[in-house]
Length: 304
Length: 304
Image 1 (spheres, rainbow over the protein chains, first blue to last red):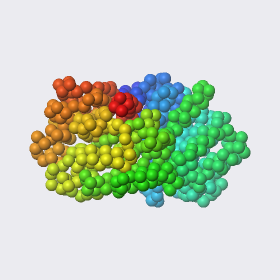
Image 2 (image 1 turned 90 degrees about the horizontal axis):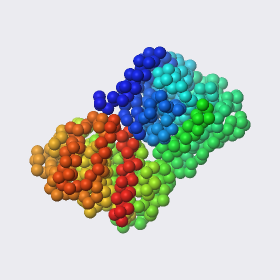
Image 3 (image 1 turned 180 degrees about the vertical axis):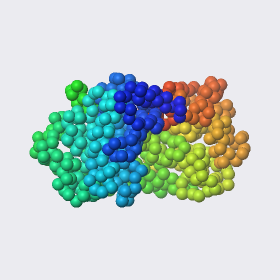
């Protein structure tokens, strides 16, 4: 193992000694993959007040030649590992000289009331909001974590000075849509697989939003992509969505048609591919990952 | 979920009603992937006297157009799921109209002495032998399970009437090499990632072989690819191996150089690619899976 991590240790060392902000960041392990490096890291997050983990893929040519970056937000129950091990993204990222960063889906190591009771709330289910409810508001700030910590890591620690895009799956698709729509200045393009597009109107969303934001539907609108579009948040680039038609959570939890109608109303360009026979799994994501990375590569190129 | 499995349910039904041997086989779940179908199954095994699980990938064109099949044997701690979810094989299998079947790595649901004590013996570590030690001999017959049950499933249940090849990783690479060398009549070609090539001389192998076969090194030779080559077992086709040079188990557990020297001595053609910077993980396997599937596709084409 000590020999295996040598490449990433060098990257880590070079990044560290040249970093102006000497953030507390540790390399946990790394693997060579498609010529590049998959690495797993932990760092102290200002947003969550916990240690947070994330993974990265840096193509073979290294940080210096990276032409774009992709933030991938995972879905319920996932960690920083799922997309890196199952989405098959590395071959396409390598081709387009694109870096990917995959954060964990919630703070860990806490023991808040009901935090570990269910798969769809608390640990593994941060929903990319800044919580306001007691206990959760001190740590469950995954919206700020993505916008400040993760974007900050890319810019300051990894020295990425190229366009960044955002994508994700299910709960992470919701994160990509809401964060991307609120921050067109940060992201060149947005895509999603099977996103929860209107959480204020679905069971998963209502449970999470009421738990993190209390029973105040007005505050929920700040984390609902349809409500954001309706209140004037749009992105200058088209949004790409792939949605399987045999997805066990479609349409009730995902409400793709409502998102499509809202885009029409808000004049937000979007491409929604409804894929017959595909479900909600990473087998679906892996199948269409190539097209999503090509989509972001084209958007980033025109953004430069 | 009920909608998502419809394609595989149809396949299962068609296979079942047309099968001469009405084996007890159940479809557990399925996912569309790269146009084809990933499915998970259980069946009653005559070799292990237990329920066994396996997974399959059948390309979009269906069983009728499959031009070859690949048996994939996984390594220590794995189940029938690891390769299917992490190896990224489906895109290449789809291209070559190849079916893949991935068996579990040991019987399950038993409680033999010391069966669950360690990651490298017992459950998840069947080592592709027919055990002779008490308790284990009644169930741990993974050699017969592959040669009889799995090949039988392909021929009788899935109606595969095309060349079959065999590959695997680590302990599964050992399985592919030993089973392939003993049965050139069954397999068009053999490949392996980071295989345990000489288990009688490595710590993993010695622990497993003594546990399953007792402390009788003569009987171990029947499950040692180097010993098999030395005793005249060869395969008419070249054997392909990829071995990472940053593999934490290389060279001590894997003994690749000894296998290479034995191939030379035995006039067994083999291609061993030593890959700088790569380790023992599925990130390594996914990187070179394309080349292995192309290798088997070429061998199967010339075998027809």
